[in-house]
Length: 378
Image (cartoon, rainbow, N blue to C red; front, side, top):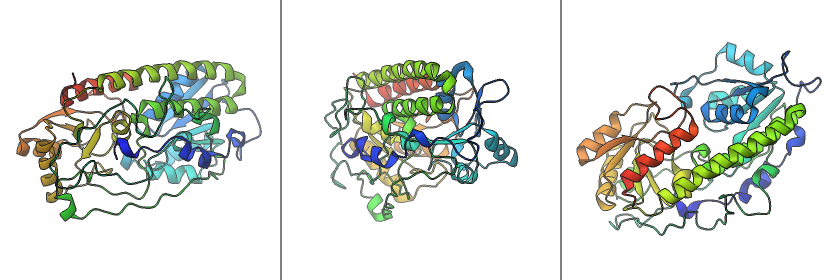
């Protein structure tokens, strides 16, 4: 995906409308919260945990299904975690990222289920080539700081008269959320992958779930979650609202840093281990080329490696990015063969001792520094 394919937020707002009025499920009787009055929240992995903790403050107790340092895509749910989910007041997850979590949530009788993908927009179509296959022309694009076709307000949010959080919904206790089923993408052949065009080297059956790496979408999720938490725990609704506003301001500031920092670059193309940064690329007028596609553990074909070598030469790419939670072997092999350097671009799927920061915002700022260096920002 690239900047010319971003779908406006209003495209999925309609499909996200069951409303926050249906927050109660099988455990609807009785007030939310344990004996200490805290709202018990089960988060699927770190980006969801971060939002819940920032918005909830001292009124919540947040546990996570994915431990620090654990690669989230392949998570398996233990019996203990399943039992804990049943006792939670609110389960916050991101559908499409962790199949085991999706299945556990569907079967769970937890009081409130919030799917983060319903609180913002997802890219539902396949990537559009940034240039004709084999053209050899650099994919440098005009950058306005926002995706083509989407008008944003001064904070970068979609200007449709209201925020997506107003239209977002949390699934009820039985998981009857309504959603649009995207058509699967056709898989590019190895022959096509070897032509040197921006094919992105992957196919998948649903939309890209990595919404948290776009600060604007992440802020929309924060707004929707704040409303869901206020609905689940009305006694502390005012504090949740105040904390949500503060968090959205921090995310807006982060968006501005990325927008300004990536406005003028030598190249718009960057190479990553897997396709985690498509939404970030869309937001700031960049083009992500991934080695393995959406699955960080898959092996690239020889044709894909050849295509990336051609891309690096044509678009003056000098860096191959790898991640902290998956093997760097393929990235370093490609870099060595093509005479490129390597660096870390963190998808912020968890905070560990290797993370370049203590929380989401700090790691994203480190990512910005790495991107500016790799892209030759002026």
